[in-house]
Amino acid sequence: MALDQIDVDEYDAQMTFLEHLEALRWHLIRSVIAVVVGAVFAFIKGPYIFDTILLGPTRNDFWSFRKLCSLGEYLGRPETLCIKDMEFVVKTVNIQEQFYQHFMIAAIGGLIFAMPYILYEIYRFIKPALRNTEKKYSGLVIGFASLLFFTGILFGYFILTPISVNFLGTYTLSDSIVREFTVASVVGFISLLTLGAGIIFELPIVIYFLAKIGILTADTMKAYRKVAVVVILILSAVITPPDVTSQIILSFPILLLYEIGIVIARRVAPKTPIELPES
Image 1: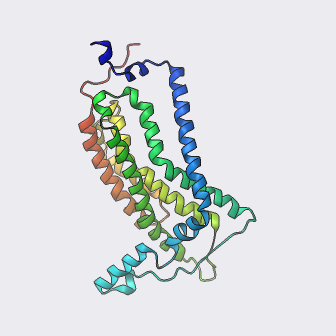
Image 2 (image 1 turned 120 degrees about the horizontal axis):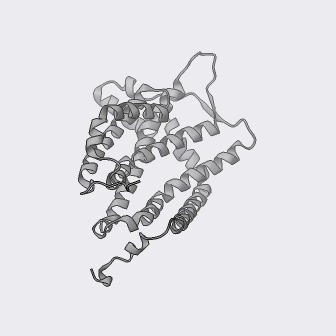
Image 3 (image 1 turned 90 degrees about the vertical axis):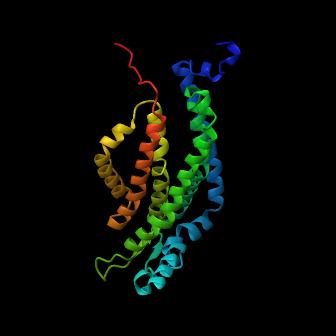
């Protein structure tokens, strides 16, 4: 093969371990800068994010609740599906709590805003290990990964969060207990539940790269499908609140993504098995 026919990135693949670490450091630095830029924007919009977005699922006029009520009216059972006012208040108990939670909102918001760029930096780091034909579809992979992430964010925010907030916000152990939740609990619960759903929806992308390097195969995934179901149920229980409904709702899309991952693993499996070096 002529020298001018060799992709320049092939030389990058011959970098030493320290050179790879140096490259990784700069990818991380640029990713952190992107998160900081997004965090600054989220910090400026902090009051709006808290009042409108984070507290949205705590109100009975939230979009998901209105659609659920419309479904109840269509089925002739509005009293069952229409959400009533959730009688709890959000309060602060520490003088520094609102200040700290403002930064928490900014950090999580910055991570969400910067996620497409972070995925791009991840691609740039692994690019030297890809073939030229694979690099042609890099934009499609990054776009698909971003789409999965934001689909998970929307799923977590409009489906998981309202169900969880309604269940836990109206759950009563005793009528003598006054439901008063701190700002930290509300911010942490809603934002981390939503972000967690977004990250979990990246499962097909993770499977793609694991299958690409030969660590994971479609046959292995099918053989351990029952184990995967148990793991998914446990993972859903950890992410969601102690509510069986939320756990099942999150489990279904993860199981679907797992099945999609099997198809992906079968299509991208390396043509020849990876041989381990002799000791």
